[in-house]
Length: 149
Image (cartoon, rainbow, N blue to C red):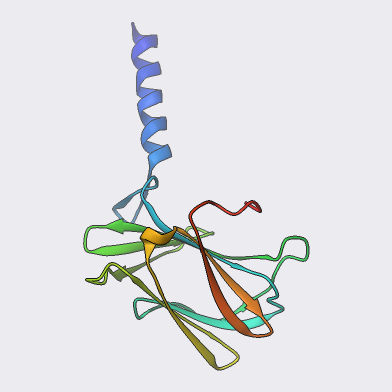
């Protein structure tokens, strides 16, 4: 009987740990990713700044694309948490920003003093690729996860 209860508790703990990330007292349902942002292609020690809905996520960070697949270590996931988004990067660092009334995500990106602004509509695809081509930034919005993941 004790063994069955121990097994049930282990499975319950595993299920909770798999579906939630709890940091600073805030839980995030990892099944509810609103968008996932990945920086790809042609970043060669570029200095970049990024904002989402007017909140600065990083300022003047060096970015380098991997030589084999072009993917950088700048990757973010947005989760909806009531009236705000929780933003978690590849290393588990958290940021927060308010949700706009229209549901879109305002994305502002600066590279070499040039600013690029986009509105992301999550219903058009949750996988966002931020691509660099000769210091001109473009977004690709996909419904399916890119194959390089």
